[in-house]
Length: 224
Image: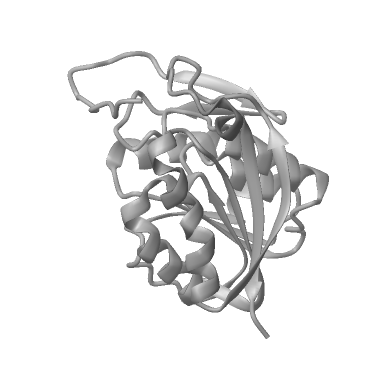
């Protein structure tokens, strides 16, 4: 799986994808992988829409939102307020605003805010009841910054939902280690479920299919 470089000269058409009754426009191919609707995000949408992730009348922060589909599912499922974060790249932010304008009603738009920032540098004036992390821990060098966002922004009785799938065998141990880092920083972490979705990138002949075919769901809360 090679990282693609975005280019202003490439004007490939945007792709639209529907999941859970929500049609999002994906950015053009991008080095931050926001152009992929990941299985982890689909599983997260399922959990939100089924109520397994309870967001009703709660404040929600999604880090590294990509297309924003989990945030849109949260608004549509009754969240009181949603902050949707993505890296401050103009193409990614413009695409998110496009989706906001085309997916949400006027009233729903008032419940959601697009918040571009680099992880570790957020400046919220509030804390959140629920924080969603969908496949963002693939960025192993950013683990400490993601942890800092949890520490700064999660309410004392809040919940973190970590939803991810392995894509590269060489990173499995490093990605899994994020759970241990959460525990080291004062969180209790429990496995919620494992969902079989099939491999995300079928073209990658890495082997390790058993590890790459499932999405892991964990819930983190502050230790008492």
